[in-house]
Length: 344
Image (cartoon, one colour):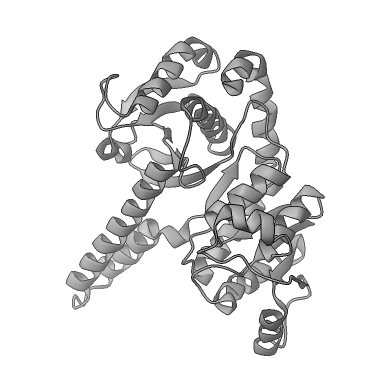
């Protein structure tokens, strides 16, 4: 039986709303998984009062405080060591659970993970990976928010993790890697991005030996044509890209819904419902923290109960299939090649 920990504090959503996602997950997984909900005492009391008959697979662990969205990561790791988020990361460190799901402060969870958990081989900084649908399957995008400032070699490390993830999770035997940029030419982009491009070219032959193919720079408009399986960028650009995609998807679904709402035929409405589900980011698991030992799924700050439910499903699959362990194992094969790169 797997043990997943869900931090329902510190997001833009009400804790009770997120707790509904935990209840839905407990109903689906039954005896295959147990859940520990992290919250402050008043919130735990509200959960118990609101839902008097809970599954026996749901338990609670009280924490003294929560990490707020406006808290700086430095302040959190120094002053909020008894928060729900700190307790959750501590449980992963002690191997007291199989995964943590949170919709809280991205900078804080990244800081806690980087400081408290062992890093995977060759990795300097953890990154957040999210997947989006394209014409040719799902593209893995990283980083989508963990590293606002970065070094060129980090992007190489992110590419390795993304390519291995696509190989072991999506069964893509020859992952194609692209560097998000404003143009396809090697000279395009900021100085740091151009340096990253040089790193990729320098190690292109080694990547090819592992059937990882560097396709060069990729413009945002080409991503959804399925030209790459892994899209690499820094956390600032990746987060803007991801949220722009979410906003455009919501806008398209809303506009189509308004135009079809008075059509009496069942078929278009059924197709529309399928389209809404396909484009709704809440239907996809949250971003996965890669680069540290342990399963951490970071859901959207304004997550609904559906988003938390799907984040739990994603964490369950990662833990069940030992995806993080498999990524770590394959990264070891690059340790000798990338020792110098990872240290600079």
